[in-house]
Image (cartoon, rainbow, N blue to C red; front, side):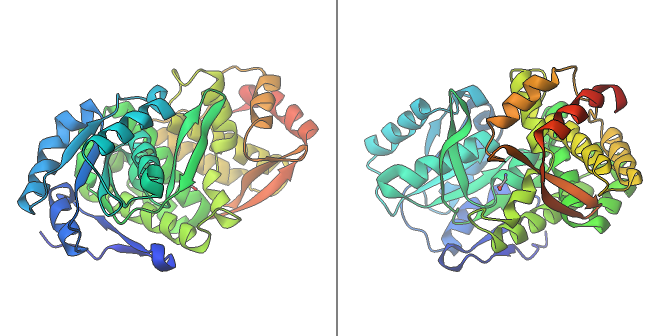
Amino acid sequence: MTQKKPIHLDLGKNSYDIFIGQGEIDRLGERLETVDFKGKVAVVTNPKIEKLYGSRVKKSLQKSGYRPLVLQIPAGERYKTLKQIGRVYDGLIENRFERKDLVIALGGGVIGDMAGFAAATFLRGIPFVQCPTSVVAQVDASIGGKTGVDHARGKNLIGAFHQPRFVSTDPAVLGTLPKREYISGLAEVVKYGVIADETFFQYLEQNSREIRALKIEKVSDCIERSSAIKAAIVQSDERESGLRKILNYGHTIGHAVETLTGYRSVRHGEGVAMGMIAASRLAVEMGVLHPHDVDRQTALLKDFGLPVKLPDLDPADILNVMAGDKKVMGGEIYFVLPKKIGSVEMMKVDKKVLRRFLKTLPKTV
Ligand code: GLY
């Protein structure tokens, strides 16, 4: 199989490559050899992923002379806690890991964030590698070095920036995801089209059926193009002081919906899909977006099988949750709003305008 050129993320001394390709998961050992890594390796994963891919990863590492230690975290966002990080530290300490040794995050966004955080903090920072196995992890969470855990009062409140040594992305592993999880992840792919690339958005419109049906060539294209957009954004704003905030398109209202529905009935990507349409309607209301561009997003999201209508929630509750969010500065709420497909801008929205808008929303979408 021909290997494509990796996407290079230039962050000075924190630079790294994102390798994307079918069978990449079987090349982890080789990749480590290529960066001349000689220390110990711990694979942090959950039982579900270990069952699916653990033996392939171990085999690849063993073939290159590594003797991987596997550390498990129970599956699910509710285990994204400091307590579980403590158990990872225990495993690393018991096995005498040192600063030159390495952690591999094998799993979805939760595993990536947690393994990355353990690596960022153990012995004040050891190297780590991302091996993402969900759509969201492949196109978003594994790129850019955000690591962390949740606190009882909110998601991702504790964390650190810690860039991986490299990212190893195998789109073929998406084939074993539950269908709803795969579809949910496509919301983040649509997001990249809206925030940065109208041609990519068009590609998604033209190939939606095959992408939804997990046709691997199309899926690989989506993962590659989305990853390249994310890498370019992180490259120009590693610490999220400006541009990187546009990655939050759809997330402000989306997060509020996820929170108010208890992170059970609405998946992250589903919340983002609803949030993107809500934000776009707000942009129309504010006179910055043509309604046709809301229709295009609505049609594409629906083609993928994603929800676009907000559940029936009290606008006051939505506002309350948003007020406690990281996107709030002073009394105003900042939104990433599209001006057209392929271009967005951060805009502040008055709370009163927002309250009025939210009241009209469930009936009009
Ligand atoms: N997931 C948003 C970011 O990486 O900035």
